[in-house]
Image (cartoon, rainbow, N blue to C red; front, side):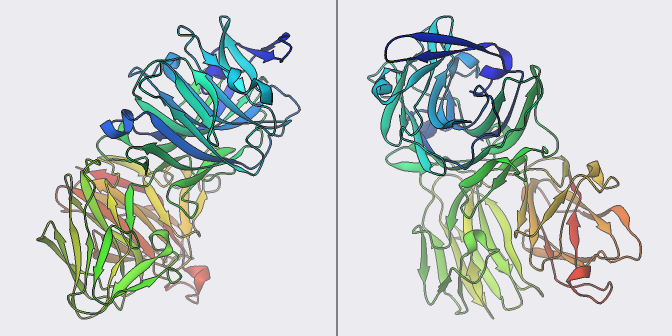
Length: 538
């Protein structure tokens, strides 16, 4: 559906079993979409040609016009130019009459889409171009429904001269294009309408677990090689054939809410809170089978909601060891990150990469700080060891492969590379005109945090002084830099702290709410910290 309704008049073609055709002209003057871009620069991803996604439709669009819709879909491009002619998709189509499955592509030269596979179940040829069928729509209740999960799949077998679109394991259409690789993937939602003004229809889709099949299903990988090779979510808007891309702030109607209790699950549609977000890197959580433990480790999945996936392993026995066995060779990694907790009951840890000590880590902090990160370069198969060295607890939260990062530049609080930890952050773009770009994020909940991974030797943190502000703990690469006391008798916007001499390479800035304040009576009412923006220098 993407772009089809933006740039051209389309024809709605209803194919009845009696072979009576009805044509209805449809115009679409604008589309909004929340795109989940999926990288496809790795051989094992782009050359396997079998991809799937789980989609959940939670609402019908609020519109009286049957031509209007909202959709959630999986799509791929099969040409390097990313031209419309090599774009194909399968997903859920929400209209005012119910939920349908749909399939669409734009290439008319090779015969379009064969919709005959489920005619007996009420499928229709729903779109056409130049007399060629380019899209199918399933009947209401055929394989999909409102408030139900559906698995959609695009697959190309080498011996076939077409792609197969599947819904919940059923072949629903053949897409007549004979190409055996992809150049980009999408897991997205879209609003399409035929009105002159945007009707801002309700759209509620949850998208999860984009996967490719390489000797079994695997999560779609991510790297930080270049920005266009990231998996990321972004909001885009097209009005009267003019595309605004990307919207610099979260839109007022559609956006995403990532990490819905699962690092590969996100909501897209009405009321989302982020317009840009990097998908998580390849993650080995502390309970992953690839992480082995020697000694007396405790596993806990209830203690720590702000830990990665809410789980931690810990030990206070010297020489107890946790080992990430390997990073599989099919994933050409460029970095590996240790995620862990700094706290008053933590001691020191030894970190080894491929048997060589790369860090003696002091994990102590006066207050608890979840998901502190340090990153090392890596290539191919890698072994990481975390060893309790001395004096108190060591923990394992997660290992991340290819943590995304940014380079020199200015990054506002809404930027998708800033990761907010804890569900208590408020993101405001309407009542803070004196903040950078008129936006600000804040929290008054102890142990909530924000992290930001970058490449550079200096970073400046911008924040607000105010009568209701508390203390923020600043940590970079697991080293406490300072405690910022933002309490002030009057409000002062865009204050900054500079952290220099970090050296070349990847660094992670971590700011955590300490749950302390010298303002007022020191209670939570006076314990706010905020993120205004970051400035990264070479």
